[in-house]
Amino acid sequence: MATAKQAKAKAAKPSVKKYSNYINGEWVKSSSGEWFDNVNPADTSDVVGRFPSSNAEDVNAAVAAAKSAAKRWRLTPAPKRAEILFNLAQILAKNKDVFTREMTREMGKVLKEAGGDVQEAIDCTYYTAGEGRRLHGFTTPAEMKDKFAMCVRQPVGICGLITPFNFPMAIPSWKLIPALVCGNTVVLKSGEDVPLSSLNLIKACEQAGIPQGVINLVNGASEPGAALVGHTDVRLISFTGSTTTGKLIAEQAARDNKIVSLEMGGKNAIIVMDDADIDNAVEGSVWGAFGTSGQRCTASSRLVVHKKVYKKFVEKFVARVKQLRVGNGLDPRTEVGPVINHRAMEKIHGYIEIGKMIDKATLACGGNILNKGEYSKGYFIEPTVFSDVKPKMRIAQEEIFGPVTSIIPFSTLDEAIDIVNGVSYGLSSAIYTQDVNQAFHAMQELYTGICYVNSATIGAEVHLPFGGTKGTGNGHREAGTQVLDIFSEWKSLYIDYSGKLQKAQIDEVEI
Image (cartoon, rainbow, N blue to C red; front, side, top):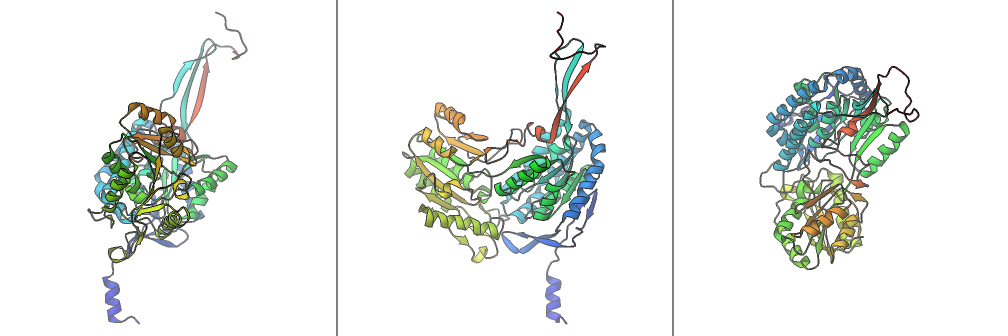
């Protein structure tokens, strides 16, 4: 029997809120009856909420709901679909402060960055909703007389969306909103470390008036993801995450003849030329390397610096990095928050050990797990800088996905370009220079999907296509109008009003 002291302690402990899946317009528990805790990575004693551990049965129910709603949503005029999405954008904007704080609590990124994440979802929704009146096809002259030719877009069908932890609302919106405006129905599998932000997005969709069954949310880890990828009624899988998982999804999708869109890793680099504004390059490199604690696929994990300014840059950069304040993202003074979980912390620290012990690079600053005092309950790593790094070292080739960057010296611009291109990824690149000729040469030769001049490798905007080359993805682009080519298929239409059989490429046309 519990003592009075134990009962009092239990009563004083705040209860943990339970959340649900969203299937066919209703908030429901998982058929598994199991739950998982969503914890604050800055303070693991802070349980944000308890979420359902979904299984294949839940995914089957969600897909069935999406299937039943598909015809009604497809036949809803695109401008009407857009009106609902404009309403959604307003709801997101109204709740931005609440969603921002809850995102920081569950993911760890500092409040300003979390606010930017929510704002990106707002921007994406407003921008993409506008396509509801611009889902343009085109007309073209036909080969034959008395014949009309044109093409239009049609929805793909049921879309399975699998999203990561690092942008808990922005990335789901990149997938969800264009899927909806194109007339598809959706099952979203939230990132298991950040389920509350996806849930907030879906709740806002519900409030906006999106009909039941059109959007569905399942929470959990690998089981619901695998079930979604393997479901025969799911026509398209859009995935953002690790390269390893993305390749497995691509293999499964190929066997099932599914459409698949992959956004995977990056090993991005900033080139700093000898004529660069060094102070500006230092600030951009700090932001690029340590924004979101380096947990961005666009993070500046390599800094390729001209030998003429190498020493000066390293001194200024390391001094600035040492000043960064690490802490709980809810503290407005914090500049670098925790990494997402214990597994990530151990992986990142493992790469730091590789840099020191195997690559033999110079550890210029950082390198430690922070686990004492205010850091004792979280997953914190010091912002870490390696200097005197060679291009083929593991820390310069492999994605670390944490607050670690490597500084590599070079002598000529073409050498720097070869270093940047000499990895298996091709997402983002940047160059700092005051020479327009060098800037344009770099923009032409850097083989990445995104390229910046006099800015860091992070900071994409929703009206431009986002994605990369080589191992970063499979050729698709999110954001911009280009994303419509993922979530719609082309239909060519030929109308012959000649009243007789005409054979294209065979009949001679009389002039």
